Image (spheres, rainbow, N blue to C red):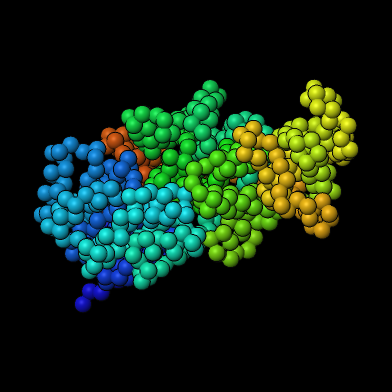
Length: 612
């Protein structure tokens, strides 16, 4: 008798071309296939989609996938169709005729997977329609969108608790690539999955190198990163504002780098066109706000850069996780400075919502600042945020070039004392630049205007440079020893914790940025670079296969990775199969792709020597 595990393994090999499951995939699939509910936390690139796709293929009926990614449903369906899976979607982009065709296929039992947006399920007619067919399971993708504590909250997800109420016998699987313990609990509670089995995979992405650099002409820093490490490679650059997105994309294009903007202020057709170009063209860089990226399956994104400080560790992890889905070395690079802290603190103070909401935002930001300011292994601290213990990774900037920790109590006292004197004795508030001018003894026009050269702290900070003082201010803000006043001008004030430092009751430990690089960061290896490391005959076959794939992708108007991933082409080039049977043993070559592309691949690889 065929067991659920046997059926799942057979489907994995026949449809997807893989011989074995990874990590907890097998346990998750077995649990859901036999009717169990599951909550799955698995990092980007960890193979979450197989956890609901295979049970949908094995169980009777159609797997209904709830996804917030209307703009990407077509790509997801195209990728499944290339594997011979009968998949479709229903959303607002379709014509009445197209929707009618999909509905007819579902009712006839001719669909393996059906993608829906959460707001469509809120319409009673949709639920009535689903009742008329056979549902294999419900998969709730990007489940963190249900969490008001998380960074991608979608109100429409709150209504998904109705799935269990209306279809109590249909198994449900909720999946996300990021969730703290609190977010995880909220997912389970709001989706009615408190009794579901929880599967938590490691959040570690060992192929990603995390680096955080002091912000100093960030656009130029970004250009240097691209030219020195990622020339001609795909990447994503995140900016906080739409204006910054536009300016950065324009800057890159002016400097000969292929780049496109993406933000909510662009029209829907422009966003769709730019997203399609990013997915389909090699070496394209997308400059975007956080409106871009969820559900992007492009495997060869070699770097993710942030030109502004993310608002939370969860957001940072989710965004950096879009790099290196193919497992090859990739870079997560962040430029971070004093103004980022001032700006985000001010945004929190001015945000809508009650005090509890602002406290929540502050907790998120404090954790992100702690990651930026740590002198310990970045990866270790990042994983600790998700309650995962680890050891030093040896491949983040702090491991490769350890920063120095130093006792900054006296400089902190000098700075805080200056703020206190201005705030309490003169009822004045100023930003970081003017405070540093006072400490360095600069006779500026503003110093003269307010007679600040008469302050006892004037000129007492010459032991540090302006850059070093800006680091002190940034870290005091990060530690809650300074705060941004809510006047909208970025002025600084002391906090309740300041007095203990001024009295010498609390020591202040600071991070000193490394001056010289002792060890070069490990560079990412591009596909082209990897090809040059292959023997000449293998490299030649690899490039021939990539050329063939590019032609196929263009002809079918799909991303190249929908045809085959680079790892599959590399294995083909290395093993050089000469028969269809040998080709079927290559990872990623399922039955549908073997039938569709087999002879052409053998022709590319072997020419006249190909055999059936």
